[in-house]
Image 1: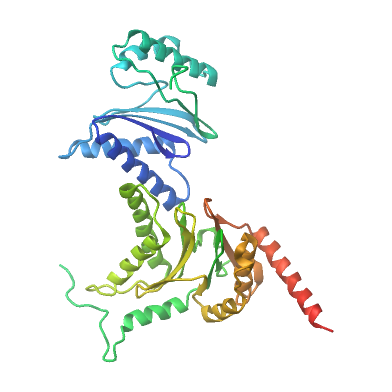
Image 2: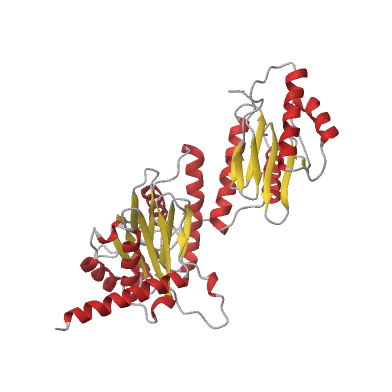
Length: 165
Length: 245
């Protein structure tokens, strides 16, 4: 999870090395925008900037094989989640997941997601996803880092599942 | 097609006239004062009076380079824009490669190398700006550096550039005392006092930026500046009264 700005997080998975390299490059460019212009990029702008970079590199000799989720809070538009994949597609979505675990969690999210979830309901929904993974996923994933973004910025929540070290 | 002749060449007695002319351009720019305190660095600029219809918020002489470093310049504004942009990119580039914020000396050196290259290139003239670069290293030490068009830099405890720089520097040499700038207020007061010496209409034409340790740069509101100016005037009156027997 990379902190792009005070209210934007970028989650990056995929090819080892590509993930950190690409995410840090985007992170520094978002900071440069802040220095040049005096205010931070909105999540939508940051997502499109990221996607454009991904697309440009895709048709070069050095494509980045990374899958991304960009989460942020905008003063005017509120919270937003953007799903991006290594082929430089971008989609604003109410919920999203990458990897083999996505096959399991997307159905849980489909079933239980409602628009206008409260903070507590959203965390409960995330817990349900992790429970499903613990039950059905072939790999044992003992611990998940959880962060929450709201109008006051990025907050660290308790690790899941509860009692994980 | 590149240029084949340098513009900046030596004169018979060893001067680089283009660089000296650039320094003349700097002397015409509006005044900038910098003071390095113990846990604060303060930079103040003389605000040129703007035309009635002009929006004075768009005249920004003090610019952040990164979270821990900022600079103000005297001289050609357009030249400064280029230098500042290159410095900002270098600050982020440094963070990307070494995962640490720049030190004030590093970014000063970078800016000076840039300026020097333009005194030794085909078809280019030197940058017509001097700058005061102020900020904190990641270990918390404050720094204030001055650069000039030739590409030299020096560290200062307090300095001024631009119009009336000499007057202010003499004032600072007389009035800078280590104990005074131990506190934030002390450093700010010294900077305002120095600027008031040369600025015509007092607080209205002063813009001040303060950076405290581990905090982003803050530009003081006009009301705060007025408050300091009034306090300084009162102090002056009281010292005058004490002198009269």
